[in-house]
Image (cartoon, rainbow, N blue to C red; front, side):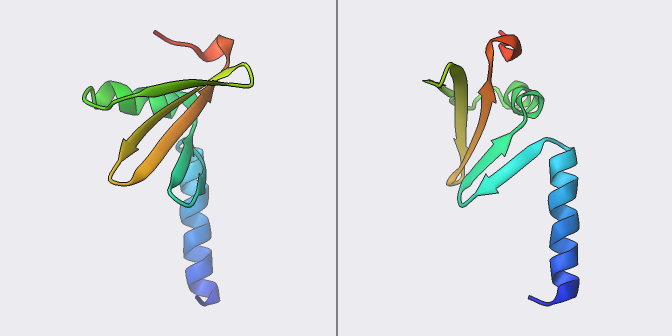
Length: 79
């Protein structure tokens, strides 16, 4: 990777963050709660798994080997 490619990737990461992609670790992508809910509403066939983690709800769905998740506190719960 050269400096130009690094710059391109850095810009893509910043743009993704601005749109609600908080971080990515291997095959896991952490989404902002609003983006997670938007994607779930647009794709009604997704199977959502919910777990309680440290007093928060961790919601997960899988697509093509990638795991997408978001953390919801009591204030973020939308039904």
